[in-house]
Image 1 (cartoon, helix red, strand yellow):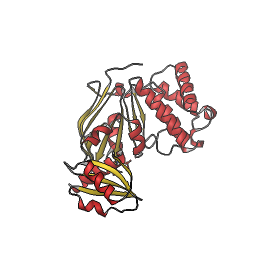
Image 2 (image 1 turned 90 degrees about the horizontal axis):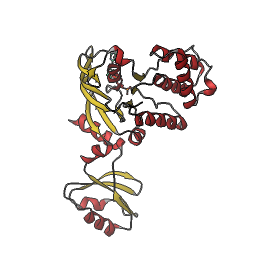
Image 3 (image 1 turned 90 degrees about the vertical axis):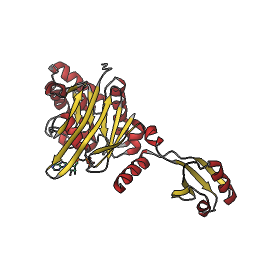
Image 4 (image 1 turned 60 degrees about the horizontal axis):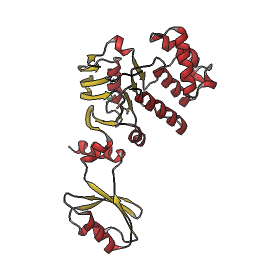
Amino acid sequence: MSVPEALLEIDRISKRYGDVVALRDMSFEVRAGEMFGFVGSNGAGKTTTMRIALGVLAADSGEVRWNGAPITFETRRRIGYMPEERGLYPKMKVAEQLAYLAELHGSGSAAARRAADVWIERLGLTEKRDEEVQKLSLGNQQRVQLAAALVHDPEVLVLDEPFSGLDPVAVDVMSQVLREKCDQGVPVVFSSHQLDLVERLCDRVGIVRSGQMVASGSVAELRSGTTERVMVDVDGAGYGWVDELTGVRVVERQGSRAVLELGDGVDDQVVLRAASAAGRVREFAPHRPSLSELFRNVVTEEAAA
Ligand SMILES: Nc1ncnc2c1ncn2[C@@H]1O[C@H](COP(=O)(O)OP(=O)(O)OP(=O)(O)O)[C@@H](O)[C@H]1O
């Protein structure tokens, strides 16, 4: 399937639960073939956003559009959704359940059974196909849940914490499947607290805090606004020498290594010379902040603001 123009737009949605403001003008978009990682602290508003995107919850204001038009009951059927609370029928058998869900989304019964079999095999569930969902381990239930999101060949995927609780092999399977769907032109958005995974998989990331999108872009773009840092390892010298340098500070220590932040206009060669004067330099290299570090910076900055 190829959907070159596919575009999911979340446009300034707001939502309150009584006195609790869950979302304030939340906006972002996910394009064809793009994997978008939705990250944020507990209670930041990710699940609420996804539920509104799916139309299972109404926004107080704002709009969700699919290919330029507001989401309707009809377009909603074309979204593959993995809800946080999961949503399978516990007593139904795996194959039966998947075929049933495909039929609910409009497939004929033979096609539905075929699609169920394809995803059962792809997600390593062949031996479990005739077991009741409630008797499966949590990770296997999650595989079934992903199969349920995919079995009707959706045009867009919205997945709430699909990786939580999976073993490393299941994480690999899930990652490959999502990447394949993406490569077929399907926009994929998923939330996760596993930021290393998000950094590895996603083309773009959105960081949400207190119901608002506070930063979004590729990890490289998120990094571009940050100050220059170097990782330095000086043999046994400690890091007192850094205090003598204007515009340089230690931001992190890991054993004998330190991450130094270099203010505007600081020449890294000056820092290297100071390090050499202090002791034997074992390592001196640019330090690219990870998504976890960027996330912490954004969340702390916002909290302090
Ligand atoms: N049904 C509800 N009734 C009242 N408040 C709610 C309800 N659902 C969510 N909230 C509140 O809305 C805010 C956003 O919650 P949401 O579940 O969207 O966050 P989240 O980012 O998905 O969090 P987590 O990472 O913990 O899953 C929180 O303050 C939460 O307590």
